[in-house]
Length: 394
Image (cartoon, rainbow, N blue to C red; front, side):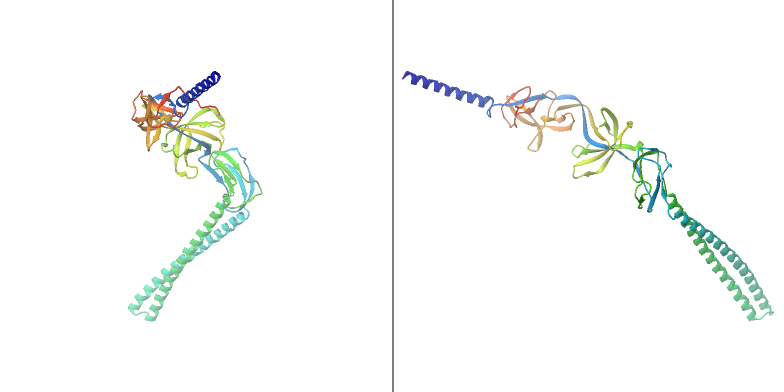
């Protein structure tokens, strides 16, 4: 009997202990326990907003050199990486029949010159005859008035004068046509000469050969590039900035550039152009950044990291960006009051890359806000302040 009572007592005591343990776990560690939070104070000081993007080094000024007519490559005098000067001969194309066409055009121009000279002589002769015929007709009319010649003779002289004037008009028209033919022949010669000159590909700038695309003997079509030349003085960065961060980017803003080939060094730069058209697929905007001083040995196409300083504020209030929450379409923060939390709306300004947000209105310096919580907060939720929230290892 006593043994049974002893066992029963032990079981009751164990049950009570279990209930107490479960209650303690539920109120201290379980769903009924206060939510653990970390706090931070509103600070005042300088704040700099920046935006970050990845880009590639490109040449703002690049030139593709090729013929305007189908040709065969005769020789290529440079290779990729060669430094060239403006006007330097880089490649020559086989002109095929352009030489013969130039000679033929020159002969046609000489013949047109001879025709012009002959027309000028014919005009001079016609003008001389017209002068004599007009004078003779005038004299004949005077003699007819005095009765020394018949009317028929006077009319014949008038007809000769009119015919002479018509001959002058015809000679004038022939001379004008001959001169037009002469001008056309000279234009043909000039045009063929330009085509022949285009068979010599020269560098338009002091630059570097970025690509050698064909070899001698290759037949190419009009517009096909033989060589590509870039102006190294125009190297800049084509950076892609997320559309959500590109709104504050403006031409003239300073930038920091880190090359993939030299990650330990930072180069200074400046925003030189912001594209008007964004990429709808990647949701990015193209921003071109130029170097303050072009790095030595930089390669076109190299990946770079760009940080653009979009705003600098001297003395503003700020909190960790993680403390800013959005509740009912309103930005705000959670604050502690008598062991419980309440949501307080705030007006937020810029946010920095290192995770601080400017507070324009709603908080004062020294106010404490909740930065992190182990679970989502609700108004009047019980909380417990801890130095840090450590996630349990899986």
